[in-house]
Amino acid sequence: MNREGQAGPVRNVPHVVHSDKEWAARLTLEQFRIGRTAGTERAFCGVFHDHHAKGIYLCAGCGLPLFRAGDKFDSGTGWPSFFQPFAEENIGEQTDHDLGMARTEVHCVRCDMHLGHVFPDGPKPTGLRYCINSAVLSFQEEGAAPEVETIDVAGG
Image (cartoon, rainbow, N blue to C red):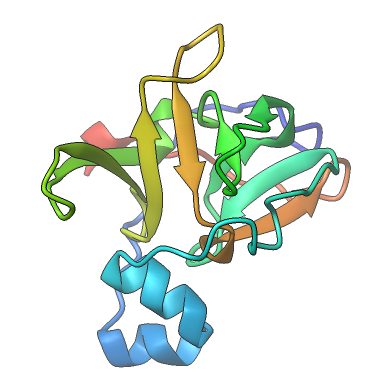
């Protein structure tokens, strides 16, 4: 991604791996609980729920670009919601049966940080609602973002 938030060439970026002890030292208690143990923050309490600045939302664990502010919408659920990711290859998905129903859990493909879930009830153009925990995000304002890259998951 360049400084204007435009996607650049896809690159093969190494997977970020840390032990639980290392993650606990790098993250806040809330980030660890949500991001490393698939927790959920309380609705309407996250710092990015009612956040309207222009820029890019990044993974708090590794800095990978996850969502553009321009793709954020008010879903009324109490969590930041987006209708598409920054780049599809930056988001991993897996089926989650934790509440007795099948849901699609989403995570950062670079560091496996649990982000939230994606649901098929979002607005056009995608019809998707990425319901994301604020605690696992950081934010780079438009024009201030350093050069970062998306990753080639097929390359390793």
